Image 1 (cartoon, one colour):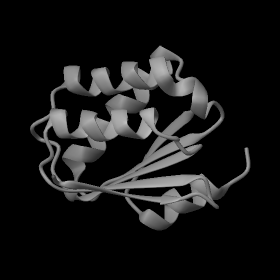
Image 2: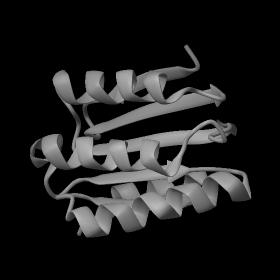
Image 3: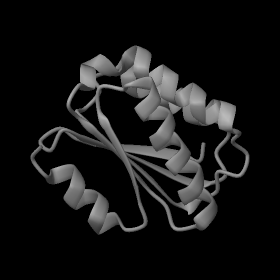
Length: 125
């Protein structure tokens, strides 16, 4: 699988790191596992070495609506995406918009820098 997971319980942070071009099925398997176990308040998807070109807008919308159905356990939390390429940045900005329309109970932002993402995740709201 092209996705690995690390959990820092002290920081209430899960980091999923993807490489290569994970499929929708691989991403959804990781996503479901995250929510079915003990999800942390904050989540970071490190996609700097990944390509999302296999994912459709419908796939992205499916992730958003899954998060909406299961996201109450993370109310007030944050999800950060970190990307290095323009295509992935644009695709994940679409996720930001889908999330606003879906009224997900946590904040989502896309970044090009790991430092910026970590700073945002650690900020008090």
